[in-house]
Structure formats: structure tokens, C-alpha cells
Length: 476
Image 1 (cartoon, rainbow, N blue to C red):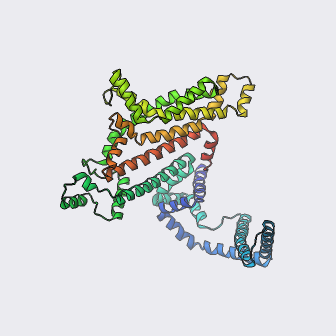
Image 2: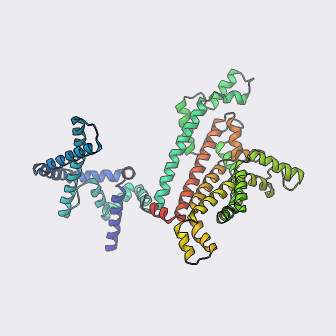
């Protein structure tokens, strides 16, 4: 029984702690509105609000009659005069009085609130506020059962708030929803204001006015702006962005069908890039200012600067046409056809990761704790791999995450060169129509992919750096 009571007390305490955040408190009230209404009726019937007002009135009266209020105002006025004199500010008497009154209002509220809290603490009682009344109900078996019956969704929010990592993930997912909506509004508005006419582009210049009117009516293009925008936003949450103007295919189905090949190509490029760039960057940092380092930096600079379409064409000419080693275009049944696209796509990532690995490792190996590790007699390999590299990972993981999200968003140039039917080539093809449902589907897809990758990278930070993990656990 004692264990059960302690458990209910923890529920009440968790509710009080969660309610300190205004948005969470609002969510708790909305998710358990019938229960909150019942508690409010009981709270008003107990005349607790009137008791608190009486106590507050008595404390404020005592605070003013004792001269403490006048003393507080005089103190604030003297402080303001000293500040104005010290800073040599030009302030009129009216401005100074206004500033002092603002400070006094804040100080008066703070002082009386502290006295009210001290009064109830000395009386060994809780303040009769609605929050404490709700927590008291949750600590009672009957109240807890009523809260389950009338407001059980509230406990899902309490669970999220009580687990720091889960709360962090949910916060980022909520932010992701707002990002997707914001991006959708901006892109849809630009497409709506675009002078390009979808009906004319698809039906052709020979289309009659009646055909164009009928096309716009069928696809809802003659509806008002807000109606079309609302339909698009609704489609995001129902996973139904409609059918493409060209081909009449379902947009979501088409993107999901093209996504696996884009994911496969991106993963191949990512693995290849990290396998080459990571050890090369570390070795270049250890051998800084040597011939290898200078050659490495030159190659990395070329890798960043080289245009991917030109590199792809050179690869096709060399390895497909002249040597005949690899197929020139992508074939789902031939895994070797992914080698050249993966190398072309991964070249820029490889160069960026290699340069970042070198600079980050070079910065870390000059820190004091690395000198301490060397002074302890640890081998150079152990110092680099166990002490330097883990502390250099944050910027490296950042650049990998940004590049990986961008590649998943669609590497249109590489996909076009090697005839890959991925998401990138799909978005590029549709934006010239413009095929509004398809373009919006591509935009939403990119926004979701980038948001998910960013959340994953942020969580990866917590595994790499204990300081970040500590901040997440403390809710910061």
C-alpha cells in the first residue's frame, strides 16, 4: 500500500514539474479536458481561490503599511540615479520615473510572491492553486482512476516529457512538421505565382481554350489560392498529394517507388567516401606539411571543384566505351552499374569529409590533453585513435550528415548522366512543366529527409560527446 502511495505521489509530482512549461501545461489541459473541468468545479466549490486572494491581500497590505514597499521604491530610484550618472545618460525626470515604476512593479510582485510562499511554507501547507489541486487529485487512487477514464491521453504527454531523450526527439519532430508546412507554403506560393501554365505545357500550344478550361477544372487549378493551399497541406498529412498532371500517376506512390534506388546509390557513395576519406584525412593530419599532405590537399581540392556531370561523362567514355569494364547506364539487375554513379556522387563528399577530417584532427592533436597522453608513454597510434579522433568527430559527423541528406534529397545530375530513375531526376523532370503535385511531393520528400537526417545526427552527437548527452538529459 505504501509503495502504491509513493507511486501515485510520483505521478502528481511529475504532473507539477511538467506543468511548469506553458506549452506542456496547455497540452495537458487539452488532452484531459473533462478531468480538468471536474477538478476545476471541485476547486471552486472548496473556495480555495478566495482563500488565496485573502492571504495575498493581507500580505500586500502588511508589506505596504510596514514601509517595506516605500523602502523598495526608494532603493530602486537611488540605483537608477547611480546608473544614469555612471553611464552619463541624458534622461528626463519623467523617463526616470517611468523606469523606476516598471522596476518597482516587478520587484513588488516578486517580493509579495516570496512572502506568500514563505507563509504557506511556515504553515506547512500547499498554496491553494489549481495546479496543486490537480496534482493532489492524481495522488489519490480515486482521482487517478478518474484521470485515466476522463483524460488518459494526458499520460502519453507526461511519458514524453518525463524521458529527456524522447522529449528531445518529439520536440524535433514537432519542429519538423512546422518546417514542412512552411516550406510547402513558400514553394506552393511560388508555383501559384509562376507565369508558366501547366495546362498549356502539357496539352500543347494547339490546345483549345475549352480543353485548357477543362484541364484546370479537373485538377482544381481554377480554385482560389487558399483552397488549393489547404488541399495541398491536407494531402501532406493524409499522404495523398494527388495525381501527377503528366502521366496521371499517384505522386506518393511514384516517389516511394523511386526512393529505393536513390537510397541504394546514396549509401554506396557514402560508404565509399568514408572508407577513403576518413583514414586519409587522419593520416594527412598526422603527417602535416609533408609531401603526402600537400598532395592530399591538392587532390581534395580537385575533388570538390570537379563538376559531377563532366566527371560522369569522362567515366562513361573511359570505363564503358574505351575499356568496356562497366555498363554506361544503370541496370537494376547489375550491381556493377552502380559503381560509377557511386564514385561520381561520392567524390564531392569524399573530398569534403577528407578536408574536414584533416583540419579537425589537426586542431585536436595540439590540445593539452593530447600532450598529457603522450607524456604518459602511450603509443602514437593509441593517442590518435583513442584520444584525438573521438574528439574530432563532431564537425566530421556534421559535414557527413549535411551531405548525406542532400544526396538523399536527390542527386539529379548524377541520376541524369547515368539514366537512373531516382527521386532527383523525377523532381527535375516535373519542375519544368510545372507539375504542381509532383513538385510539391518532391519538396515535402526533401524536407522530411533532411529533417530526419538532422535529428539522427543530433542524436549521434550525444553518443559522441558526453557534454551534449548531459544537456539533452537535463532538458537543455
